[in-house]
Image (spheres, helix red, strand yellow):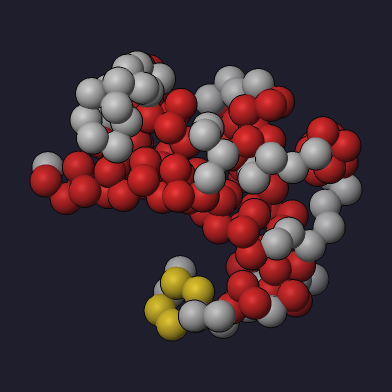
Length: 148
């Protein structure tokens, strides 16, 4: 019986997808269910409202979101998989920067005067809807981790 670890994805290094891998519909099809499952668990942990979740996923429709929540997951687009990857990367970065979840969420949901946020909370920047906003938050956290 195949296990989750038996799934093969084209990689350039352990854990690093090969360039162009997300262009392959079969790769995206295999990645979609676990990606959505991880996203939903994280969104629950972050206590995000449905509309916030939909915004992070690129403003998907309510019926699509509820289908995904009910386990009816088709093949996600490259954009949707990248968005989920960015959200998971933001969470990982926060876990590495902060000693506990409460401190991480306090920083993530509090106003921040640093350049990428302009007085808004990092979460609010991520919720603006553009994939560029997710990249901005992810890059900020990665740069901060690099300075520690």
